[in-house]
View 1: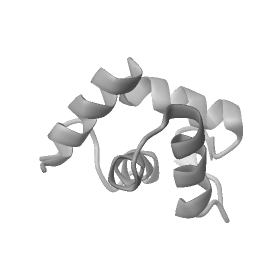
View 2 (view 1 turned 90 degrees about the vertical axis):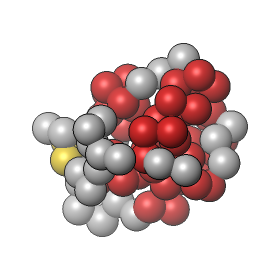
View 3 (view 1 turned 60 degrees about the vertical axis):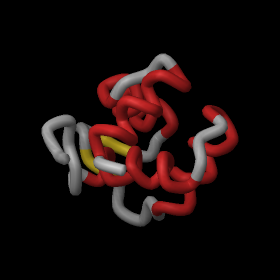
View 4 (view 1 turned 120 degrees about the vertical axis):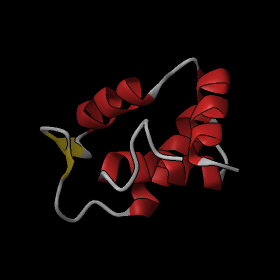
Length: 76
């Protein structure tokens, strides 16, 4: 599945898009000024997304990649 496919499925399931997850991650203390805080691990974010949004591992990792800056809305 393409990155865009993951983002579309996540938005359909949760009603939240990339900007929403960026804001939520900052509110939870995972990010600051749009960047992951030092020491924040993928597992912490994946656990949060699985628990609060019932996302699967692959979808949660897509959000992690978005928050880490590896991928963005234009990524394929």
